[in-house]
Amino acid sequence: MAEEKQHHRLFHHKNREEEGGPVDHKKKVKHHSHLQKIGELGAVAAGAYALHEKHKAKKDPENAHKHKIKQEIAAVAAVGAGGFAFHEHHQKKEAKKEKKAAEKGRHH
Image (tube, rainbow, N blue to C red; front, side):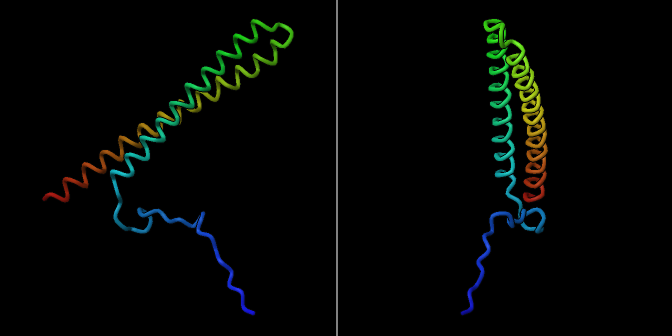
């Protein structure tokens, strides 16, 4: 009995840019915009957690060291998420420029 092995295409998705096919610039701008918002939300959440741990460190002197470590980790996560949001903001701006250039080329 010949059983055919089915391959799932989960990680074999090809990018349209790499294939040389048409690029949906509107979709690209929207994608980077969503990722920027996720980065911003992550930064806010991590910052809020850092402040929460700072408050806990003051209220619980026995475990203050543990809370300060958690606070520092949350602060680093907030900075990282902010950097990601900043990166995606620039990617979005670049995608908008590409979209505008593609629209100019199409009309002439």
